[in-house]
Length: 98
Image (cartoon, rainbow, N blue to C red; front, side):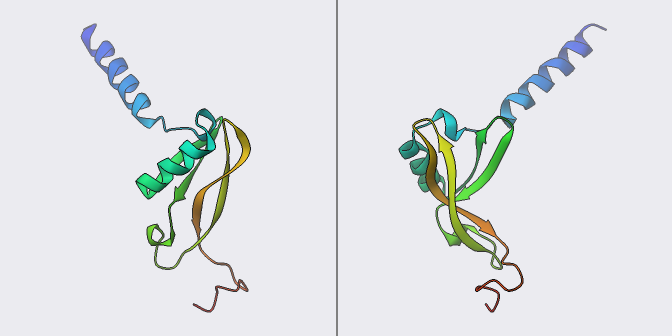
């Protein structure tokens, strides 16, 4: 009977370890930018419980999205250009006609 709670606890621990993502604050700006460049599109932690998806270029966005420059805090600078974020253009944006 004790094996079941232990198994549940170990399973929960394994899944929580998988959910952790690389953090830009634990890397230099160059390392964060290189990671995005290698992966193409990746979710990175940006400090505390915050995270965002960064992409190398627009080809990693949905067909209706545009790529906008993205900055994140890094270990060596508070504002590091790591790549781009994909967003849906809003009404009245210059990209709304596409």
